[in-house]
Length: 85
Image 1 (cartoon, helix red, strand yellow):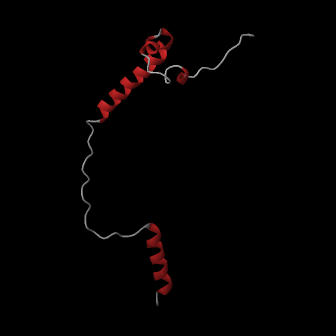
Image 2 (cartoon, rainbow, N blue to C red):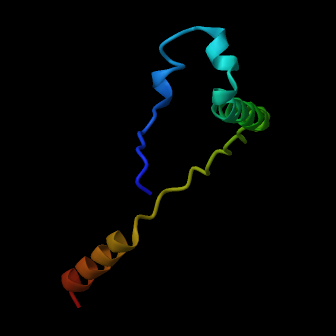
């Protein structure tokens, strides 16, 4: 369009000062509102997540472990080749 533009960063004005007048300016209202909404949403998520409790894990039986599929296959193959018959 032929108009001069520049990229603005939020740290240019708000992060460099603690002046409350800058924060109350209508120029920053959208950004401040979005930040506040983000904090409210985080609080809601935190409130929902806190009541969840972990279930206790029941103990497993004391039976012997049989081994994996490959262990069984290896043992059967060894038995086949070492069979005396």
